[in-house]
Image (cartoon, rainbow, N blue to C red; front, side, top):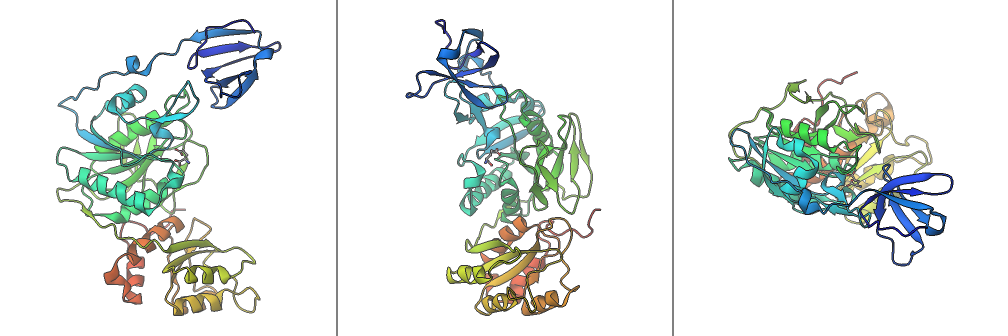
Length: 428
Ligand code: GLU
């Protein structure tokens, strides 16, 4: 290899005997001096043995971030919004020297990657309750987000709130906020990206732009806003209690379940697609009581019903069983029948609900006798409610001591349409 002036962070072309690679030169790990590490445009890191390199060409020198950051102006004629950052790809940038990821937590950094988000609104506040991958979140984080969001919603200077979040559990957080914030007065818009803003193929800009339009709209809804398709042309807003991540990598990872999108958001318009709650002048209220000991169990053929006993012994107060089809588990003469165990844990005080693994459609326990038996034993069939929403809602309902004294009251609350979690009519 010829000597080179390339520094970590530079965009370089590495020529080998048979081919060449373009990518960002990364700092080599200390114990790998014989290797050049490169981040390719696809996002993959590759290691190239120095011995195999004929030449290195510098295509673009690394520019220190601070010189690139532009100042953010507040423009009087634009509405003010706030952003709550919690982590995930959308809140991160690649450190081109190490290949690691760092967080974007100032308006200036945000402006550098996503100037579009400032086109329609002033970002007057950025709150960072924590930064993490969403797989590490749980009810404590949902409570923290709800506290910050409700404070912002009750700030008369702020028209709406955007939350940036990892995709993996975004729909759980959206569901939690749908119950934790009562008397919602303004839009709360959760958004994401599948590829970070420093990648040419990032989906973050359009998502944030559309999120800003949703945040200044006339809605008072908790929504997830993101790409409507894999094209980079417009977004949809989905109700937070009726949406699910359905793809591991596509830009349009989120789809509404048993309902349609609330609105279509293009570069210049917010187009309502169904009725929604309108913004109002009252104060939003926090209601973040939560019972942590609630589980979501997926039934599969041949599964041992002792799993129910395991949770009961650990002190769990509620279980959502994700059943098959219209609401079935092994029953009748089957050696593996779950019926007696379900009845037993209910007698011992565990509240049992049912959702469906089919994701789409509605439970109907009345079609088969086994379903009727479970229904009579007190299992609450949650119609077309999503399993993730059901888990969060059961935790929220069981967190309210004033309701949990009476099993009928718990059932009534589980079946009350509190945040649009039931659809009246299913879409084909
Ligand atoms: N597991 C990460 C998260 O959900 C993936 C990054 C992303 O989806 O933004 O935060």
